[in-house]
Amino acid sequence: MRKILLLCNMGMSTSLMVNRMRAAAKEENYECEIRAHALQKAENVIEESDIVLIGPQIEYEMARLCREYPGKLMEVINIGDYGRMDGRKVLEHVKKVLESR
Image (cartoon, rainbow, N blue to C red):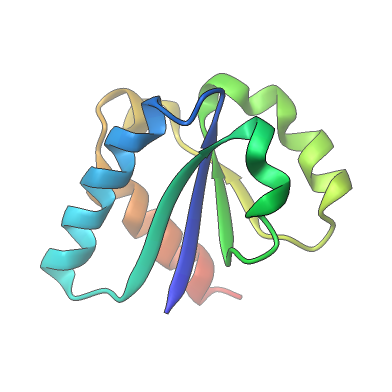
């Protein structure tokens, strides 16, 4: 089972995206665990995740997170998909990235 982690400032705006992604995963019978957390609590959950999705509002944290967690797969969520809360599109991107590794 794939473990997908979404990070944002407080973990609230990504909660809606998580719900949309879970719904898309359920429709596709894609077995995964999707969670959202605040950036401040990231160190407790990053290591156990297969991929970390960073909310576009904290894209500036990407370089730091990559330095702190070298080798961890991280992506910034597309701002358009995030703005539309298009969980299906974000999930499709995650699947492509994970399959390419």
